[in-house]
Structures are given as C-alpha cells and as structure tokens.
Image (cartoon, rainbow, N blue to C red; front, side):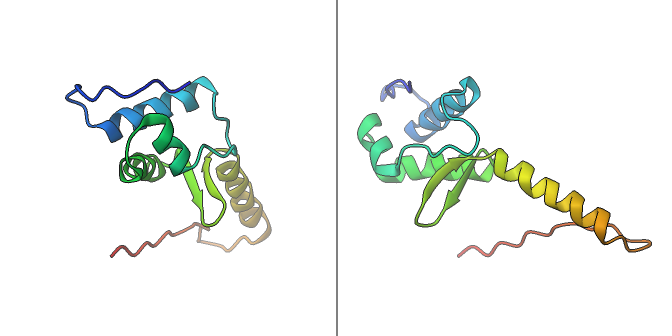
Length: 111
C-alpha cells in the first residue's frame, strides 16, 4: 500500500508519489498490464491535487513504467511492450530486405 506523503519533506509531493508508485510496481502490487487507480482515486488517497498526481504519472509514463490509454486509464507497462517486441521480431523474420534492418521510429509533438 502506498504510504501518505510528507508535506514537511523537502522532496516535492509529486516526487514522493512517483517514488511510491515505482516501489509499488517493483513490489508487484501493480503487475504489468494492470490498471492503476485513477487520478481522482490517487488524489483522494494521497490528499493532493490532481495536478500533483498527473505530474507523477507523466514522469512514470516518460520512463515507460506506465502506459496511458485514452478513455481507458493508466496501466503498468510490461506485457504490452513485450508483445510489440515480438511483433517486431516476427516482421524482421518475414520481411527481410538485404542491407536493411527494420525498426520503429517514434515521433511526438508537444505544445
């Protein structure tokens, strides 16, 4: 279970939540592919704003520990990544092109 934040700590609340969620994932409290609590649920449980929760989740998403699915929720990464990896290797096996190597390019536009 995620412990309560320490508002007197020099560490920002979102960093405390980020660390607590990382620890919960490492302990297996949240398994790969499993949905984590919503922003609202984490906000109530931690007694912090949704902005604080969102900052923590954004950081974990950038680290590829979490995956956000619009309209569905936030999930622990893992199985999804390995499934993509398997498809990449299947493509490489089926579509060999001499002198090239298949790959994936990720582009992101931020405003």
